[in-house]
Amino acid sequence: MTSQVNIIAVGGGKGGIGKSVVCTNLAIGMALSGQKVILMDTDFGASNLHALLGINNPVHGFQDFFNEDISNKQSLLIDTGISNLKFVSGAGDNPGSANIDSDKINTVISFIKNLEADTILLDLGPGTNYNVIDFFNISTQNVVLTTPEMTSVMKTFSFIRSALFRRISLAFQDTPEIQKMVDHSNPTHADIETYTTGLLRDRFVEEFPDHLEQLNNIIKDFTPGLVVNRVRSKKDLMTGDNLLKLIKKFLEVEATYLGYIIESDRVRDSVDEMIPFLIKDPQSKPSENLQQIIGALTNTDLQFVKRDGRIFVSKQVRLSSGWEV
Image (cartoon, rainbow, N blue to C red; front, side):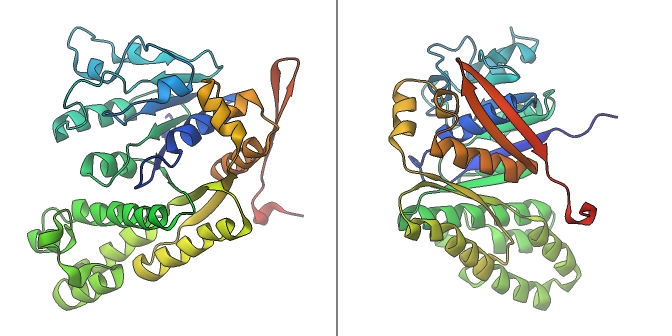
């Protein structure tokens, strides 16, 4: 029996926070460490991952998911030139490609779940529409990205809240009364009395006590990981801890601070040159930051060294505290 593939979705409510850059380099780092990795661009309206990988014109793109002439969808996997790393492009930005219906989303989700890999990384589009959130919620590891700016922090909080409430909504889709309480997709009809999980739980105690345990389990099982990008100061470093407290206070969710990546010209230059920063300079500070984040996701300690144009990887598996002597 094959083990379940690990799906890591990288999301964030705000656009322009470096999500695609971080997701691409995470995929590269995991592939270089020996995992069989597939990176997928699900930002169908504004795909750009192919450029970050140095691929100018992808052979296949998003529209090919629904091309009946392509019977073998595995052929949509593009070689990246990086060992162990395949890529599925979101390119094919025809008008309306971002506004695809739920049936097509389910087709893509089914495709993702049937891919053969150790890890699949999904780069999500910005915002909190259901297409984005549903991709986020199929993952086995959720990663949310923010920058230290207050606008980004609040968007990230809203993203996490939307993902949680979407999970609750889908779990109780056979109970219309609960559905109405947790569906805040239309703010003019939102039930503000259930805006936090504490308020929602109070309503469950009063009106749906038989479903309270299920609600508590959904909240308990939702454990997203947080990454703070473009850190410039010690004050910026506190963003992660402050956001975790906010999430705990209003959503009662136990999120994890996976790490941070410093603001660096090396990252910006790598984007302009279409060479991922982890490959361009694996011993730079942003690359070291990224290796720590990969370590937190995979429970390993990684160190990348570049010599004579080749990258060498040192990998050690962390033992749980129960095995320490």
